[in-house]
Each structure stands twice: as C-alpha cells, then as structure tokens.
Amino acid sequence: MSETLKIQSSRFGELEIAESSIITVIGGILGFPNDSKFILLEYNPPFSWLQSVENPDLAFVVVNAADFGEEYLISLPVGDKDLDMVEEDSVAVLNLVTVRPDPTTTTVNLKAPIVVCLKNMRGKQVVLDDERYPVRFPLWSAKEGNEESAAGKDEATPTSETQQPKE
Image (cartoon, rainbow, N blue to C red):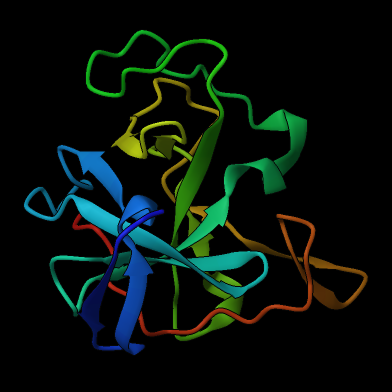
C-alpha cells in the first residue's frame, strides 16, 4: 500500500496524494530545471494539470498526446538510462498547453512532449527533431462555424491560470 502525503497547491489548496503517483521529471521541464516532482490531476477532458509537488505556484495544463491521433507519432526514448525504459513498458506522453486570454489562440507544444515510464513514474521532456511538430500548434480549429479542438474534443474550455516554460 502506498504512503500518502500532503502537498500545497495555490490553485487546488492542500492535496493528499499517494506517494506512488509522483512523477519525477528528470532534468525538469524546459525553463523550470529546478522542479522535477509532479502529480497529474484530472481536470476537464482533454485537459489535465501537471502540478509541481515542490512549488505550490507551478502547474501546467497538459493534454494526452494520444488525443492527436496516429498523425502524431514519436520515437520513445527506449533504453534511456534516466528513464530505465524498455520496449514493453507502458508510457504516458503529455504535451504542454499554452493558454491564452482568447481561448481560440491557445496552443499546444508538440515539439517537446513529456514521456513518462509508468512502471517507475520517471519522465523526461524530449525535444523532437521533426519539423512537422511545432512548439505552438493551434489547439482549436474553426470548422463549419463551430469551435472544436485539434484533439477532437469540443466540450472543454481551457483556463488562463497556468505558468508556461520560458521560450
């Protein structure tokens, strides 16, 4: 049975979390190298929060890379010594969202996803050398006069309360 601990969050107040749910992001997130321990909080699909365990004020809005379909294929860092990941391991791939005051201009970073090996909860932000994947991919696209997300969801509205990596 996993131990629980309490952490503080400026957005969500005090949270009681399972220690086993902490994701250790090796090297931190670009622009935030000193913060490496995070938890994933479900929010409003397709959005979740990646909340820092160490810094109550640091949280990122993220989406699951699987929401972008088969067109968004990345090579997983199998064999990476920091992740201790092998081909058979289950992974989560998260993309950071930059929320803008005008939700229609919200973007997602496809260039630098965070890959998490679920067996050991170690993650790493990987910068992809592929021009098809921009840092600022429009999350919302207009189709037949209605707003819908590039991730295939239209019920969620992102919030503007997020910190983003310095670019």
